[in-house]
Structure formats: structure tokens, C-alpha cells
Length: 224
Image 1 (spheres, one colour):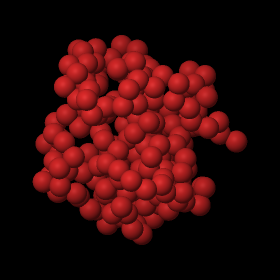
Image 2 (tube, one colour):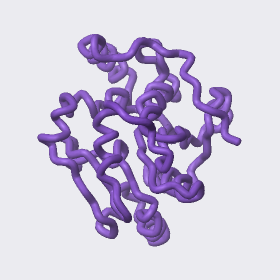
Image 3 (tube, helix red, strand yellow):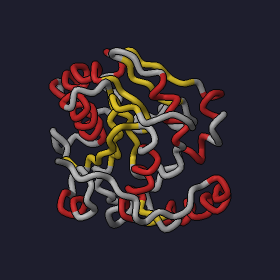
Image 4 (cartoon, rainbow, N blue to C red):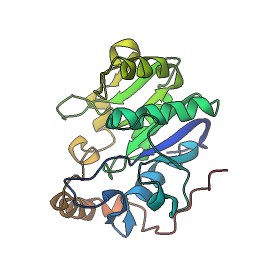
């Protein structure tokens, strides 16, 4: 990927899950010497003028020196994190947010750059996948014009992370294009359980020549 980060885009790591299946906060599980939360931040840094984290465990995440906020509306699952991400971008007067779930360690920067490049007013851009929905809403880009539709879904009590999609201009990047960046099953692999982290180690070994080296000292500016 070439080009400078877009100053009008907020990069948001979504790390608000309860990690019940993992048994501990998976955001801090390490893969290749780098915690999952820092891997996600590293993926987003080339794209956005600022990278932040949405997480409900404020005390632990604040120790990492990253800008962090909890869900604006608690208890509604991934939709709460997505809502907070887009609202944060709107608050800062930005055009949109590019989001990445912390448990998706192999999503490449180049794919996310493609999603950001397709953003427009009121648009949500998601990559097609082999997943149950057929696309990945937590590895995606959202214009701030999506915020009213997200808030309307929350107001009516619809907690599905894609509940607002019918009310926005949804653009799904076709699977053939997504596949040009790698194997979708690897790029969208989720670390949900301890055994998934072991599988991620195996996948990392196959990807290592194309991976940047460990960067345990990745720094993200403090929130002012």
C-alpha cells in the first residue's frame, strides 16, 4: 500500500467483547510477539490520521497508553462498539471510520485501504467472505452519515450488528476482489477460543514472510 494516512478517517480497533469463550481478555493475547489489540492498531495506522480503541475494560486498556472509550450504549454487543466508533468519528468532524475487530489478526491493511477508498456519503463498505452473513461488518468502513441509521436501530431495540444496513447505502466488495488480497478464510479468521489462538500461530507461520516483524513497542498517541 502507498500513500499517506487519510486525515479525515478515524481508525478504530473494536476490543469491547467479553471474551467469555477465550477465558481472559483476548485483546492482550499475543501473536507473533504482539498483542492482538496492537496488531489491529498496526494494521490501521497506515490508513487513518488517528487510531483509537473502543473497549469496555477501561482500566486495563488505559494502561497501554491508547485513546480508549467504552460503548456509548452498553450491553448491546458488537453494535454498541460500531455505534461508538462512528459517533467518535462524527464528534471529531471526520468523514468516517474504518473499523477492525481485535480478534481478526490477519486482515490486511491493503484490503482495508480498498474499503476506505470506496467510502462516500451515507455509505457502509464491507468485504464479502465465506462467513455466515456472507460479509464482514467488523472489518469495514463506515461514513458518518450512517450514524442516524445506527442510532435508529438502537432506539427500536434491534441489537443485530447489521440491523441498520437496510437504511444505508451498503456496498459489498465482491469476493473475487477480496481474494486478491489473500485467502478470505485466513484474513477473516477469528480468535475466539484458546485453540483458535494456537491455530492462529500456525497460520502466522505460513504468512510470516509477508508479515512485519514483532513490534511490541507500537505507540498510539494519548488521547488529549
